[in-house]
Length: 96
Ligand SMILES: [Zn+2]
Image 1 (cartoon, rainbow, N blue to C red):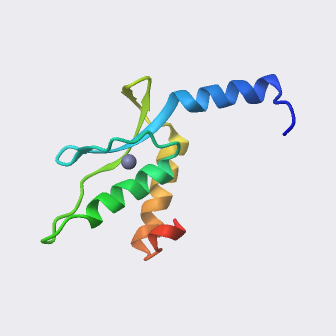
Image 2: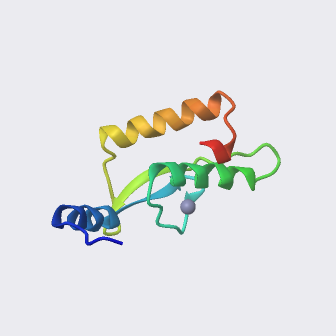
């Protein structure tokens, strides 16, 4: 393990402040603090897989900072679009 340069340390700190949850109006928010849009999206899919009777989860990844929901950046929205397209194309959850 080398020493982190100041910029890298700063970026790590910033990343830790921002996190993601799988949130839905009906299903509510998951209890995790996901580090990426991808893991929050997988969490949302798994939430739906736990339901029966044709029900599905309305959860989607949402960005948070210090406990407050914040706007997703363009790159985060692009990532979500990409994940949803891959999922619609039949990509397995573990391969997202
Ligand atoms: Zn979660």
